[in-house]
Length: 481
Image (cartoon, rainbow, N blue to C red; front, side, top):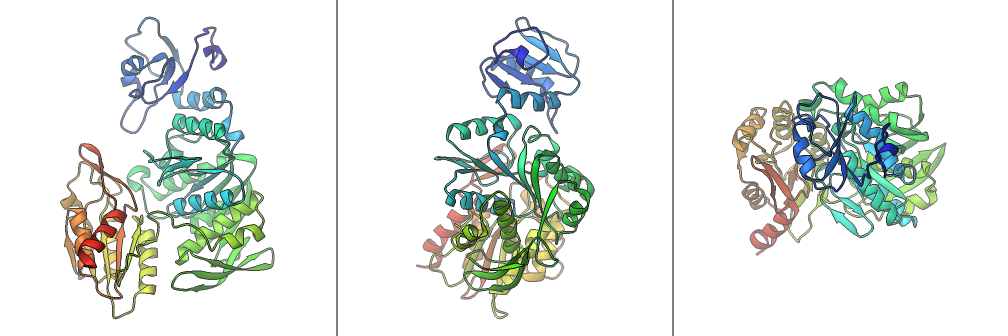
């Protein structure tokens, strides 16, 4: 595409790519000098040119201008990128029905379940989120929950080539705050809840809320906002938004309402109420928080054209969401659950479920850590919550980055007043010890990483076997023999 088709200029350079990461080679590219949290793109112009940039969009005055390179100064580089993306990629988000899911908890379960239901309805739904990037026959690990805006558009372009019709996209608060999805238009935006998390980034719950709220600014004119009315911030959203609003809940009357919930060992039953009609629902999803997730899924798919008569029978066949309430069943005589829970609210919910399935005579054992350089205020809070429910707490490493895993663990332990705990820095060894101390009927929870196959350390991203693989190996090598 010619440069003058993208920007108000007489220059007719052939542009073949857009670039925000100066490390990634891209032939005949425009490099956008975006200012991030830690790095400023203006400091990487030379590297971008070495990797194929022939045009630089910048907002700061530059000391050096290289020959044969076009320099265009703008007031706001990110706004310019947001404006140019739909032009360069021919408005891909207008050709794919995009579900955007945001909130502290539940994003992955909701997004993957939407993908499953849409695909079962003989359409083709992709997924981008914490677990993977997944569409057609392509699956890869993500770098972030919500990729950078150019990466998202590259994926959308490829999705269209593979006849993808829908996309379930997890939208993080950082992604919203940093404008990663500003060039998209959503048909459906889902708000799950808002609880203590990411305050190292946002500073206050109010800033965190406003970042999440921004997704509703990106709805199509006929798009729908789907909101958990039982969450206080969801209730606030319902009052503040002027777009089409659809509510779901359990505690308060809502457009999609669940009542008469009955939890079984391997399934849940409830009555769905929609417009005074009642529908009996049976699902293989477990725990109360998953009923909330399911209500969001039902509302989203229904408002995009799937009938309840099509949706409801499928709710008993939902595939296991990797690392989300994943019950490990390898022949052991105790419960073992792997989950991504890493927030106070997430802990409360999964511990409540663990207590429900564990007799008073049996133990709840937990293994978890907290991430380095991420929301340090929640560390003792997590320790205190674990103490309320668990007979044994093992604190371990979890993406320590440049912080000392031992010092992080000590901060978590400061919230434990009388409970029994140990600090085992090596995560493999921590998991091994938790399994070895489990007796028949006990429940072991391995929290924080889900099925994440890497660990962030001081020297960067390191491959990690994965909690799920480690648990299964240890059950067969240590527990069952």
